[in-house]
Length: 380
Ligand code: PMP
Ligand code: GLN
Image: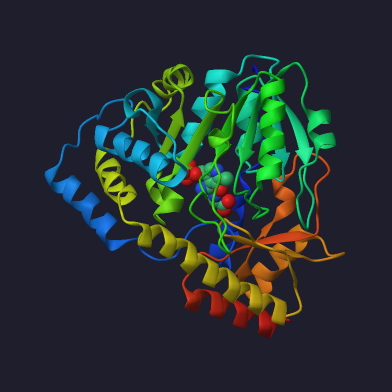
């Protein structure tokens, strides 16, 4: 028989599904896949319930319900000073994942090169390849995961159509600084390319840092597609509500991909997220402060057990460097014996993987983090 599509055939199952499956099998505490283990904000849940029972539950507009699109535009103004026209510059998607696919499908033609930063979220490369793109990698290494001019110069070429930047960066837990962002902007501009900006962790930055979207840098307003996710901003990862902000011409192209991917997103959830994005600053500050405390709780616990804990500037994640131990074997071992699950960071590389770093998710209740640390202590 003829082969199925080569970009997808033969791919393994995503590491998150594999490790969560293993965690269930061994009744392990799952600090692997990134999701909070509480119920999410009660008022946002109540809005969704009300919209389900009393609202409109047929197809909403393809671009998203107006309240949510307005809320996204207001959000970009409030947090980043961006003037965004909600009618031509915002669109709602079914999660950031769909937004990523729509942006790539809108931009990439066979042979176009896409610059990606390793370690990277595992959906990126299959989506780039499925779109006909050719991935070109900039490899970042622990502990500071720094971007250099030399590395960018080696990855960019006249064929570069886009860069896909995840900031804050999962799994490295790095927040790119102004100097690095300016450097990336310079290369995007120099290549006459676009930037797909996966900023799902925009509200999860720590130690007084402020998130700086690439789209806000000089020259970037018409080149960037900024992607957000309600999953991360409201601790509701199962809802799969995402949003894109981009200049009108770009967004129009992305909407053509979106219309034949999912077309739309559940309207009850959109209504609840429209409400959520309007919550006052204390919600957003509180989210980051609460996650920072959890980071410190897990980080201190792992350090006390003798782990070499790497800095976490943002995201849901904290990494440890095992030195000469292999990450994958270690993650399986602790799942099966200590009954605590983590994710091997080598799964986030396509070329030349770093094989000694393990990612733990700290967006969990304190009791979950403490129980995981107790189990690791007993085992070690
Ligand atoms: N990008 C990154 C970097 C992620 O970690 C995730 C995981 N949630 C996503 C995108 C996907 O987000 P969503 O669940 O909204 O599709
Ligand atoms: N973003 C989550 C993580 O990095 C996982 C999302 C998924 O399972 N697809 O753990």
